[in-house]
Image 1 (tube, helix red, strand yellow):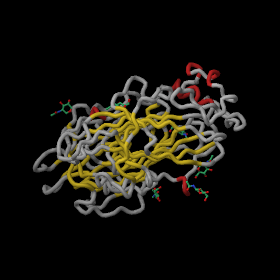
Image 2 (cartoon, protein in one colour; image 1 turned 45 degrees about the vertical axis):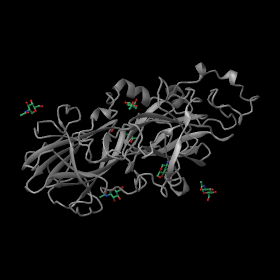
Image 3 (cartoon, helix red, strand yellow; image 1 turned 180 degrees about the vertical axis):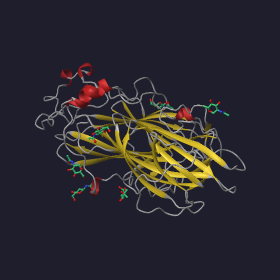
Image 4 (spheres, protein in one colour; image 1 turned 90 degrees about the vertical axis):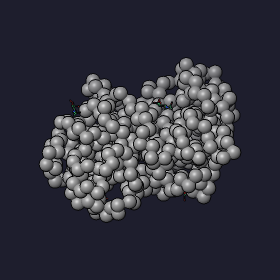
Length: 447
Ligand SMILES: *[C@@H]1O[C@H](CO)[C@@H](O)[C@H](O)[C@H]1NC(C)=O
Ligand SMILES: *[C@@H]1O[C@H](CO)[C@@H](O)[C@H](O)[C@H]1NC(C)=O
Ligand SMILES: *[C@@H]1O[C@H](CO)[C@@H](O)[C@H](O)[C@H]1NC(C)=O
Ligand SMILES: *[C@@H]1O[C@H](CO)[C@@H](O)[C@H](O)[C@H]1NC(C)=O
Ligand SMILES: *[C@@H]1O[C@H](CO)[C@@H](O)[C@H](O)[C@H]1NC(C)=O
Ligand SMILES: *[C@@H]1O[C@H](CO)[C@@H](O)[C@H](O)[C@H]1NC(C)=O
């Protein structure tokens, strides 16, 4: 398990893509894209041709696999934009994401004390729609001990770490067979217990507006070796092992993981965020700069967000270089609503001042709602969560422009975590305030 005290965990574990905003020529091409009419339901699409997934549920007379050789199967990009329907994603009701009934899964490799080896494991789930149904979108959330990257049909969607908060991604699907894959890593280095587990829930919306559920269960496959292309739809996983269940959420919890909060489904909360600061002991008075970088799902360039934040003792908050607000009222948490966040990379920066020698720290929880403005599926928004934790960086050298997205923080120090959001008795925030106030004296103006 990834203990809170692991302040030194390598940041290179985070999948930070080098790419930033698409060049304007690409954007203009994308904005000229014509979204197609819904895929005609009278023409069911065949399942993805793979020897490991026999098309027994699809009469071979109507879908001879020989007419759909792998080479002619359209690429993710071409296919994704030519066959999506305009069916809105369904939300609410019994189609809401919930982990209830999903299994905590892993490879069958625990020792007699319940320890799993450190390392990366590949997980795959192939989803074939019921006959006559055409998938439109997938809403998917996962929790992992300790870190996992999600791929849908071979495309990298996002990385989740820890189990208290799950990001909820909306991804367009192929009309036929679809593949969900994770590379999940058990990071533990020390301690008597080293659990490892992956928990997944998803809702598929079909072009006719109906939904069905996919959860982590014994139908998933796992492998300790990840050959090239393991996450791709055409990969043959027939030799992969079946996963084992370590227990069913929420009644059988393999390691007291507790409740997993789903971004966008459960209210934003700082309870699982940590107070973060430098490693100084004792904490000296003065100003520190903190940053956290996050990449939104591919294509999701338009976003808005909500932040709960408090500093011990004062802060000014910036998102992508824009000033959001100032707080000087420790321990009262403030809530900000932020519109017009330009993805796909989001940089949260905090100018924090310790004015009282006893303690110092920043506590924050943020939720970012994003979508692809050129996507061909309506209402396909993803919810990504940021908590103050070891994935932040800190510097005592508060240099000009530190709040800007392109600032190089590679020489900054790893963060040090103190207690979670329930310590130091922060006072719950009100209903929310728009970006307001002025930067603290000495803090950047932002752009
Ligand atoms: C998981 O996949 C992501 C995206 O390709 C990659 O950045 C990361 O290094 C992989 N994790 C491991 C442990 O291989
Ligand atoms: C998207 O969601 C909004 C709010 O729930 C709803 O008013 C709108 O009709 C939806 N759009 C489509 C195309 O379904
Ligand atoms: C969702 O609700 C509908 C209508 O009440 C019901 O027919 C269906 O069985 C429900 N599905 C699930 C998975 O509970
Ligand atoms: C997406 O963001 C761009 C840049 O801020 C804006 O011009 C555009 O109107 C947004 N699109 C939608 C659909 O909100
Ligand atoms: C502070 O950071 C700036 C820019 O990164 C650098 O030029 C300067 O040498 C640093 N100062 C100290 C004292 O580390
Ligand atoms: C901020 O956003 C939340 C969630 O959407 C909403 O409930 C609240 O009313 C908003 N507050 C303001 C001041 O806009």
